[in-house]
Length: 436
Image (cartoon, rainbow, N blue to C red; front, side):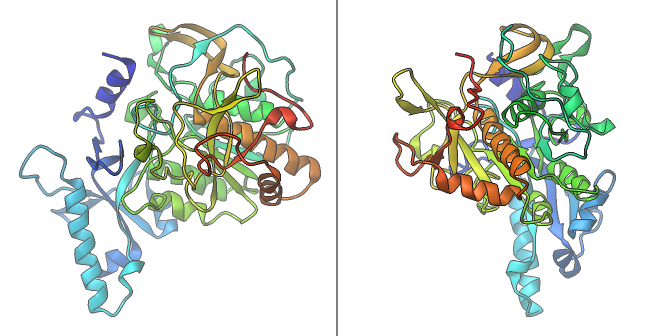
């Protein structure tokens, strides 16, 4: 069994406290949902009340949804068959009932929300995460970033949370709360790392380096809730929305928010809780997301399926490319592409701070690693937007729009599918994030 198969088995274990199911849709490769969970808005609930014994509202830990006008319910009605998972059928039936009730009241049915509860995450089997496992290295960064600032966070990394240690004092740049700690390990006693343990630490390190330090970062743990299985790099629509709502309640909101995860949805829209929370942020906040990650054997049609949140109009979607010594650019074998991708940049052989531990089949890590994935291309671009925004004292959105417009077209195929080419070596700092 490969590490991906092992990870998939843990994720789809029916004995999980809150089971996960595959959507089983050829047009939506590897899309995942919370089994027997449904999200509705206030309007839907007013039209068709959901009550026991068929529905029970999940309120513990989800009170923040009320601020978004949303509610999370568990579907308690017994299933006639144990498999396949019937969540999609049940949710679509409920949606039809609510829409009919809206039409009967002369209400636009498009105003109601009845949604599957989507799961974020990924690797080459489930898109959105790294292109493979990290590799240990003892190579330090050629030049450490400037010391951190003492101010409020100017950036956020929604990911697996944070861990102390690394090749420089990353913790000094982070402004976590007690719930943001990365669980890291499948076996804490032996320090056996999960396949995405430390993912958030790695991403935060890339962002700090590319922004050249002098910043503080909110490392919100939107993935890998310890009560939900640990260090496999998965979260869901509400776990991401919860972190976003918490940011909105602080004295200032981040200029740049990095989201290195993805999913696909039946309506092609960012999952409702995350989308609603994102809409509460000022237009000056820039969201940057990884374009997702594919198995290298994925078909071209599969690669073109829009990945969310990268394909959201509010978000800058970042794909991965590389260049050889002769200046020939190529698309990374794991990267998706399509008209929804805005920017591409380095996402292979990325060097960053990491954690301590052992990873089966890989070896021991001592605070440094090299990793591949669009997960790491995203913070390469996000870090530059943040650096310019702070240095020029202008909004991140103004900087981002200007930067993208100034970038050249990608000199490789597929034409029109990789956005604009951002080469960090050509900027003022001239940083190459790769270990060559």
